[in-house]
Length: 308
Image (cartoon, rainbow, N blue to C red; front, side, top):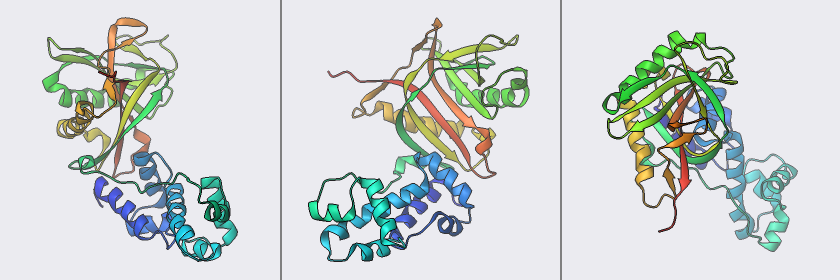
């Protein structure tokens, strides 16, 4: 089985190489000894779009050059790019671009295309792949978990240990869980003087009315966040210190890039308690683990940089 980066890169390459042959998801999956459901899930997680829609958009975008620079009929171009019927191509073209192929050819209107997706070298981790950044609005949510204070030097290992213990032993005491298969690990209250922070392995709940004894409740307010997605060739319980460190090192490069238009808000106040400051959280949907690949999302509150 290919490592995540190599798999995703090979899938994107195969799509481009076979853009005229009308390659479909089932054929792609067979080429990499995957089920089509497995490939669809991985592609959507990595690139936040259905692979079938991406393939169709790439075929339509690639066909534009022939429409403008050749004398081929619309039917010939439709067949050349994997459409069985001229009308199928015309309907798909109009849905994609808001104009028919004939009108585009006559008027040469400027339209927005779908360019090829690419992975970059920084996305390649030892046993995984990192995609992003993307910018999203995360709606307000509540969590309950077991709070731990961890020194920075131990964070990458202790966070994993406490997270595994919480998931296997402690989460069952919590009632009214919103998504029972989803783990949320939240980091808050960075202490620059003592070089430590608080880590809260948790699950999302409807509200904070019934917090079990010994547990802690937290609210993440609606926030603009940057998100990265990690795919690892291992079980989600095996996101150890080395794997976490390699991922966070690449994420930190984004925030240190002077060209980035956003700043990480290291100390976003919890609106319900101004003494508690949220820094970031990771989210793992354990139901997505298929025996080969672990999927994890990482979110951090951000704001736009002010002009100097």
